Length: 279
Image (cartoon, rainbow, N blue to C red):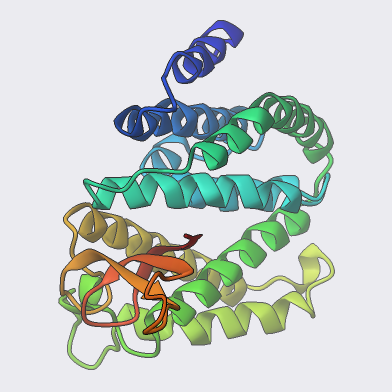
């Protein structure tokens, strides 16, 4: 990653005619790449995360993993809004040939891009310097808390039963499906995190539970991404489709006051993106 490369990426975005609806769709790519590359390189070079694992992650997943490292240095939550917005914009145009992102939304993210670069490079360098003094327990705590959060999100998204995207995985007789172990693993780790204060408090079960939770979470995240690229719902196996619904209107004035766009499963509650636009 070089300054010139990042400047060229933003220059590509700036050269696009944002008044043209189709060009607005193409403008998402350089903006998305800018944030993707910055987060990847900071995560790898300053936080010590695995490049190959992150390369297969979408923007939100990369950001979630990276901010779990940067959080103890400086609260990264103020960047959640633009990063999540960009992630949703990109997802919506990938799954809907006619989806046109808002010019205002793109410009708002573009305006914050240089500030984000300055922030993440600065905090990343501070993490690299300060983490040299982190104890093994501190690193264990950061990693386990992040994966507990990931497990919570997946349980919220998919529910108590193994979702379609991993349902057919081979399970040996007498063993439960790996997905069903998510809650017990995250509960065990959360309970132990309150009790672990030093390396002497850590036992083999703590390490085994964390390793197993990482495997289950990463496997599910990868399978979810594969199914979404095929426009297949990872939760139930039906089609991912774009729909729109009008809100408001009356017999005297049938014009709606808003239109709700939704990208998600045509059968269940799995949702990739939704947006409400005032008419």
